[in-house]
Image (cartoon, rainbow, N blue to C red; front, top):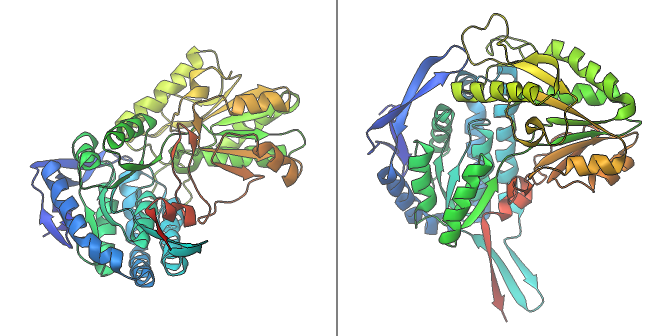
Length: 472
């Protein structure tokens, strides 16, 4: 059967039990580009049963052998990278260069890292008179978001498979076509039947059924804090483990003496990355009063390089937002910023010129934002940057830490030691120092309401392991 018409369960594509379908819309032109089944609790149950049946064999497979399977999956994705990238562009609206470089290049690299880690990680260690075993948690429910539709899948599936777990994936309903291509790559890699399963469907139906299923041992969810709290409550009632990567309202702190032009330019690029639809986007820029207006002017000028455009065209760096709901949400926050007294420096809620069709929004900069304003406290998930003034480092730290979130942050200073010293004061799971690059081996995850647990590298692997001590 056509994979787009079915679920991938127990190593084969099969018709969905649920009768509904989900339309997939291209956000650049609002045209339907495909449909997928809207699975229900019966589809979820079939997938979980397949995963449970496959668990003993996969858990007993030597880790190095599991690593070879993950390497084959990496190679299968690499062979179809152009198709994967084009699919991300079509259903998410990501500019094609970013889709090729980040949306697909990054997860291919992450899969490779777990292929190596599966073979090298000490799943057994000696501590005193005890032998300590690190064993797979069991069946994993992976519930993934639309903003990074391949990277977030691989960041859950690869470590789970490396740990010896089996998986049921429920991707976001806005971007399921990428997940279906991923399932085809799993099949091509020869991963045993039932080790990986895919169910498409709506969050309140298929997602909830998966999180509640008694056959699931761990729920790994990436998405909004509100949904993460509900999943945590469901899992807690069943004493089920969770890994939650949730929202953010990350601060970019520019200390006196830092290279202001470099810091601001990097900040604008970061907020426009993926059309602002990144949980770790640095959406609050904290600048000392002495250079505040200069920084604001630099940001306004930098936006000239980030005009929204057709994501299939070369050189475009900002595409549309993912859907009509997100489009209305972001424009509503821009209106709220103006209503609460922030100074609109660039952009605004008016659609960009020449884009009557599609969910486009103009990248926006606000100044005179105070810490209590809505746009300084709530996650907008769009290309909206707020400048906040501070008088000294103590105030900067209070403002930076003054939200319910703690996912990421950045610090710029005259030298890296000064920046690192300030970074230690921040309630954030990951802090960039003077523009430090993303490291796929470093743990990623948040403090406070930004989540529980970590992804990537050895820390990401640890989320899918449980510990047994043998006493001698």
